[in-house]
Length: 106
Image (cartoon, rainbow, N blue to C red):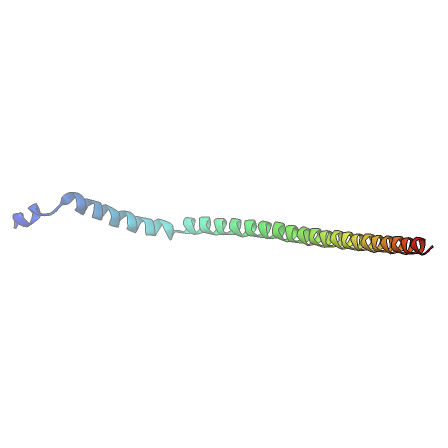
């Protein structure tokens, strides 16, 4: 009967037993009332942080919308100005052609 104990690796058996002991103790510690209070406090802190981040995101989105609207308005004004300049240039060219045509007829 002692021969079967000689084949046992006591180091691995001790490590296994220690793991079981720490696992059982860990479960008891993690399910205690104090641990639950800590979990509740941490969860509340995360929820407050989430609320703060969401408020910041909302502000940034509002600002981005305002910036986008302003940029769109600026581009529309530039396009209108460029169109007016192109129209003025076209009128000036037409007037030049008319003057040139009148001068060549004389």
